[in-house]
Image (tube, rainbow, N blue to C red):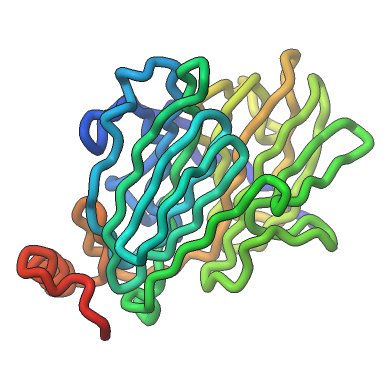
Length: 285
């Protein structure tokens, strides 16, 4: 018998500032990471006010995680200690595995109208991979497959699978799914999920119901966390619905976390910051 996931909790993302003063909304992060395991943090940095984002995220370190940046509008110039540099813009994805250590910067520029719309998701690395070699992948819109259904539903697959269609990012230990789903008004879909996996959605347009027994619709900037089950069931409201779907296999490992570095023990965390201070953070291992 198929079990449809119910809603465990909903929350509106919270305004905050990061980097050199970038205004953004945080869907989750830093508090109760076991609820979103294997995901650590989700930031919504959509803004049409250049003064709110132009100071950007100057050079800073990461270790022990992967960061996934998904752009809808605008541009972000990036550079890192691997020698990568360039610009990601509307529809692009930057999938960066920090591994044992990387230092990078992200400087938003916006589009010709001053709009800069994007999201950053942090994915935890298992203990055995935290000190792996850092790597980077840039993904263009043409590499992200779309599944279109007769109902008008459109599903963009950044990572994961819909039937025989597979997203461009594979081979990740936590088996993540990251989908951008758009539904016309009134359309309902179901999406299969692995039992035991964490599953969440974040609404980025319109509104909808995310469980058959839901009494109210969730609208823009709402995070939904689901209970366990075999599938999620979603129905768009009268203005349609667009949301990001995230799912993955929980690591259930200890987390020692401070700022941009996530390890398993306080000793590992202290060592990481000591190496950053003394200049050995990027040393080969």
